[in-house]
Length: 247
Image 1: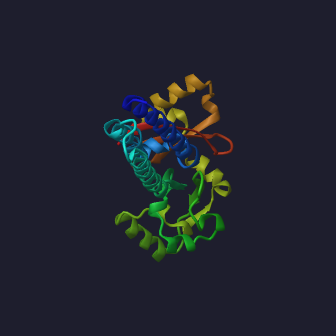
Image 2: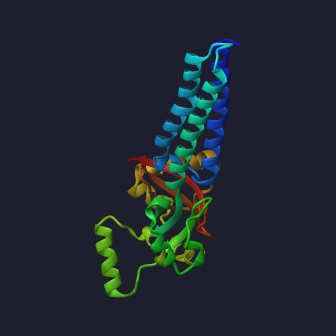
Image 3: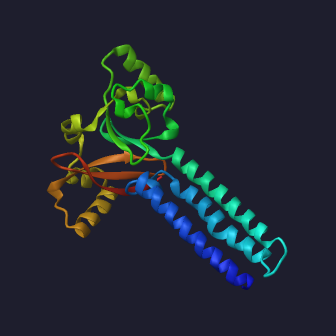
C-alpha cells in the first residue's frame, strides 16, 4: 500500500466518524437550527480540522510500507484523534441546550454550562432538577409574586443572569400553553414588525404548504442568531424553527 492509499483510507474512516458524531449531536442535543444558532459550528470546525484533516495528513507524511514501528505510529495517531474527538464532543455536550424556556414573550435557551447545580436542586418540578441528556425540554418561566424576590431577579438580570438560568421558576410548558399562545404573534404582526423574519417564514410556508392560520410566531434568542419558532396555533407545540437573523 502506498502512502497516498493509506492516507486516503484514513480520510474515509475519518469522514465517516466525523459524520456519525455530527449526526449524533444534531439528533440528540440540537433540534432544528439550534446547532448553528448556538455557535456549535465553531466546535464543528475543530472536530473536522483534527479528525478529517490532520490525521490523514500525518499518515501521508509518515507512512512507508514496511517501515519499522509503523503500526505503533499509526496507533498513536489514532489515539490522538480519538482523544481530540472525545474532547470536542465533551465540549459540545457541556454547551448543549437543555431547556428552551418561554420568558416574557420569547423563548430563551439555557445550556448545561449556564445552570448552577444548586439552582437545579431548587426546581419545584423533578423534570427540571437535572439537565436533559437528550433533546432540550420546554419550560415556562413564571415570575415570582414576592416583590423583593422579583426585585432580586431584576438585579440579577442586569448582571447578565436571565430567568432561564433559574429552574426554580420553571413550570411545565404544557400547563401554560394558553399564556404562550396569548403572547405569541400572528404572522400578520410579524410582517408588520419584523419584515426580515417574515420573509424567512413566508418562504417556509410556501415551501411546506403550511397554512398561515395554523401557526403562530415566537422569537428565540440564541448566542449567534435570532430564531423564529413557529408553534401550533392550537397546542402551542413547536412546529418549525427558522434562523431569521444572524448576530
